Image 1 (cartoon, helix red, strand yellow):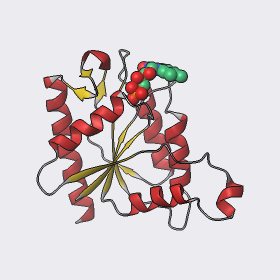
Image 2 (cartoon, helix red, strand yellow; image 1 turned 135 degrees about the vertical axis):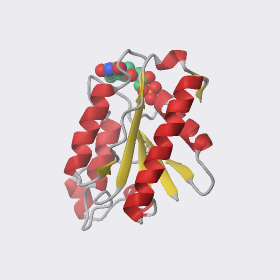
Image 3 (cartoon, protein in one colour; image 1 turned 120 degrees about the vertical axis):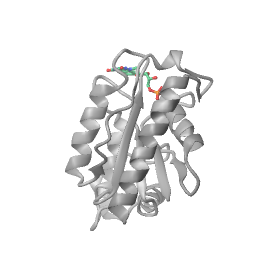
Image 4 (tube, protein in one colour; image 1 turned 180 degrees about the horizontal axis):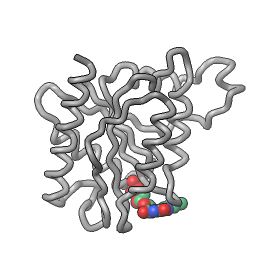
Length: 180
Ligand SMILES: Cc1cc2nc3c(=O)[nH]c(=O)nc-3n(C[C@H](O)[C@H](O)[C@H](O)COP(=O)(O)O)c2cc1C
């Protein structure tokens, strides 16, 4: 099973990207998490799209199509998702069929504040519903006070690691069930 890990942060020391790396370490045999960086995606522009997807957009859409599921790590900016992530979703919502249509997804998130990106995650669920992406109904991973749990890009907190592992396993079960 191939899971695509997508972080809504471009920051090298991103707490959210750290969650994806931790999930990759927890993946059971037969499951891989491949991280896809959103750094190279241009801003969505329908004029550009009309001339054909730029190479970075093609790579993004191909990566989604080649995966069995997507694990989103969702930072919170101003009580919503980052522009980086929204832009990537907008590109992937286009085409016939759009790469996101019928995909299975799961959301985790971290922030230094007390809400662990809860508001952004709720917004992401709404956006993904609009793109006909199935978000696994498996509860939430809200890594609050992330700076106390993630050091040097590594998840150090034992309880969070256990919760993340269980969440990821539930997601894998959901992907298996839907993919047959
Ligand atoms: C423009 C901006 C707005 C932010 N707004 C929020 C917010 O609404 N809620 C929150 O919990 N953190 C907020 N933060 C703090 C981020 O959660 C923090 O920068 C976090 O480290 C971003 O995720 P990352 O570590 O994956 O890059 C904001 C940060 C920035 C730069």
